[in-house]
Length: 293
Image (tube, rainbow, N blue to C red; front, side, top):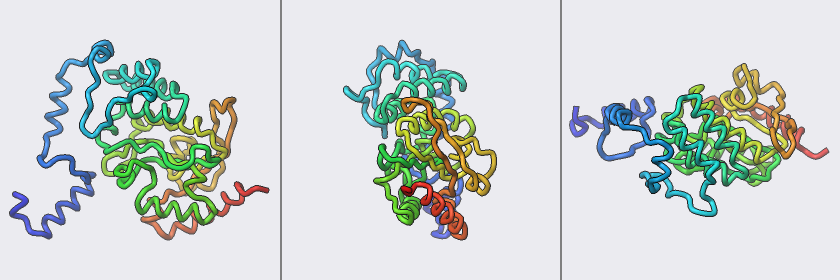
């Protein structure tokens, strides 16, 4: 049925169905057959890193222009990224590990993520959601994925979810100037779906390197996804939040263990307001830990 022949209730129902299926961002005026585009792209001959090195960089729609000095990527960071373009799943994960490990600053890590094309999430997200807050903070909070508002703003924990997190932080005397905020995945999955194991494996080296570069004294994982990826939690967030963990910083400049915790994420609390009592109990316990003796 043509949209012009539909009634307002039918149009409203269709839009709600689209949103439930994860189609919540309009990218063009005309529909595209993505299956046909994918098949055509797969049939094209793949360029080798040598071929790509001899061609000028092309700006993609919606992407930032190529980096120029002094923020351009070094050769040691470019090579693993180029290899990931036509590599196997294991090679892509290895390329992510090499690209993340080559970053010596947060700016270099952000640049590496901007250039990394080994994760399909980058193609569906509006922009990179890297971090917010104070990189010198003693406390780092990590969620699992960016939300819809984060994807639009390019910062983690925006919109209603971010507003609730700000209130939670304020309740124990903190704000964004005193913490550092990030996510395991820097790109929003379509429809805010959970990460696949493969996507987690690709994003995890960058998240781990981000934690190493910030080198906080306390790590707070917001939600089960972050707790499972970073802390190895096996249980759901209900049990994980009651346990204390240690997170090993591989270089700081020497390896050390820091205190780590799992808490309910703000997006869950918006859907389950009754669970705020558990979040408040966790926040009070955390405040006693971080307050100077």
